[in-house]
Length: 56
Image (cartoon, rainbow, N blue to C red):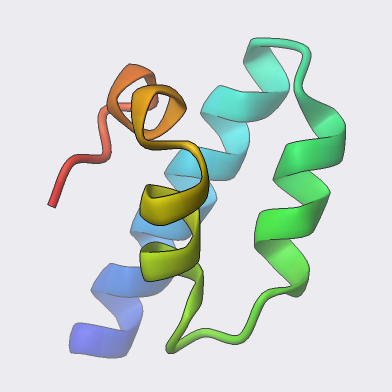
């Protein structure tokens, strides 16, 4: 169940990034390992993460 939730959250973030015209960052998120994408996204682009509604 947790893997499904994480996957959905990543898909939502990727969709938001694409909607913002940030396809390159969205592709970067998709190639990151499942267990590391959240931390890397939040540490690399914290403001962008908040704009995507992702603030853990």
